[in-house]
Image (cartoon, rainbow, N blue to C red):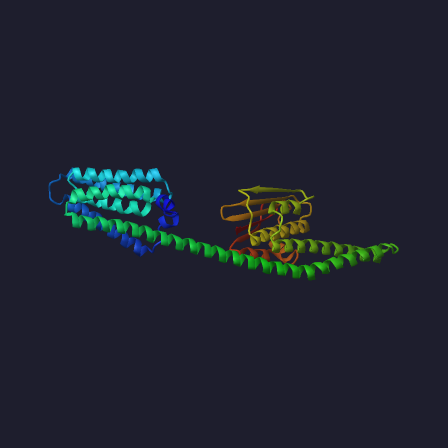
Length: 387
C-alpha cells in the first residue's frame, strides 16, 4: 500500500480543473497577472538593467508561463518524463534568473516548482524535485534557519494539501459520474420495461386480432372461389383478397413496431432494401454506419415506407432512389422518384392516414426537419433528424 501511494499518480479527475464561471476565471487571471507584474517590477525596478535586459526578462517570463501550462497538460496525461523535463527546465531557468540578478523571479519559480511538484507528480518524483527547489530557495534567501524552516515547511504542507484537495475533488467527480451513469441506466431499464409492457399489450390485442382476421379472410376467399364465376362473385373475391393483403401488411407493420419497442429492429439499411425489393429502385448508404436510437430509426423507416407507398400509388413503375447518410450528429434520408411532378396535396392526403403533415410532425418532435418538393423528374422527400 505504501509503495503504491509513493509511486502512483493523482487521478486524472484530480488533475483536471473543474469548469469555472467566467467571473472566477477572469479574477484568477487578473490575480496571476498582478503577481507576475509585481515580481517583474521587484526584479527590475532598481534601474540596474538595460531595456534589452528587461525585454529578455519578459520573454523568459512568458516562456516560463508556457512551460508551466505544458507541465499541467503532461501531468494530466500522466506523462512522467515530459513532466519532469519541464519542471527541471523551470528550476534551471530560476538559476539563470538568479545569475542575471532577478532574485525575486528565481525565488518565485523555485517556490512554485516545489508546490506543483508535490501537487501533481508521483511522490517518488515530486519529493526530490521539491527538495532541490527548496534547498536552492534556502541558500538564496538566507533568512535564518527558523524563518527558512517555517517557509519551506509551509510550502511542503501547502503542496501536499493541494494534492489531497485535488484527490478529494477527483473522487467526488468520479462518484458524481457513477451516480449519473447509474441513474441513466436505471431510467433506461425502466423505459425498456415499459416499452416491453406496451409491446406485450399490442401483441396480445392488435397482433392476435390481425392474425385472426387473416385466418377468416383466407377462409372466406376459399369459400368464394368455390362459387360459380360471375360479376358479383368476382367483385367480392377482389375485395376479400385486398382486405387480406391489407391485414397482412398491417400485421407486418405491427411486428416491426413491436420489434422497435423491444429494441430488436433490423438495421435501417436492410429495412430500406427490403422495402424496395422487386421495384426499379436503388439504395445507397453514405457515412460511418452506427446504431440509431429507436425514435430516429423508427422515423426513418416510417417516412421511407410512406414515401415509397405514395410513389407506388401515384407513379406506379417509376424508378425510386433512396439515399441514407450518416452525419456526425444526424441521419439524413432522401427518397426521390422519376415518376413526374405530382402536387404535394396528393402526398399529404394519401397513404395510411399519416401523410406529409404527419411525417413532418414526427421529424419536428425529434428536433429534425422534413422537406417535400417536386423536382425535374418527379418528387423528392428529404428527412434529417438527430441521431
